Length: 197
Ligand SMILES: [Fe+2]
Ligand SMILES: [Fe+2]
Image (tube, rainbow, N blue to C red; front, side, top):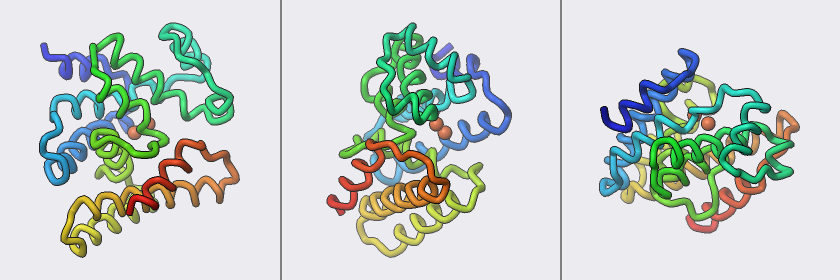
């Protein structure tokens, strides 16, 4: 059995999140083929399969995993519990499935993004946003905007960066509307991409 087959076997997710995960697997491959053909499809699949591996666990279970894998819990994690699952899934990727740094880092940052993302981080972050099973308006908007940019831009990499920037802006607006806290890492990610473009 390959590592990815084992992960697939070990996934314990609701039907909705399982389908989302499969959508991310397919979308990372599509994005990588278009923008970063040198990325390892095997590693991308590992990252995609594991990215929401712990998403459905309770905060208590997340904290227990933090203790098990020696993950420092920040004040921001406590205030934005959604941030736990990227960190705990990245630790599981390393310790249980021997994932390398590149793969683990893509999982770690898939929720917040970060400034100067690596190619694999960018692909997983964006695939998580626009994969086909995502049907909320914000995701459809971002997908359509990215597809429009692909048609307009000669350089497809610019279209990808514009799409990712648009996804950050959409997320930040959504969080503002809900009057919730925004992770500083997301703000840094958005600012760095804006300057980059
Ligand atoms: Fe996630
Ligand atoms: Fe996800």
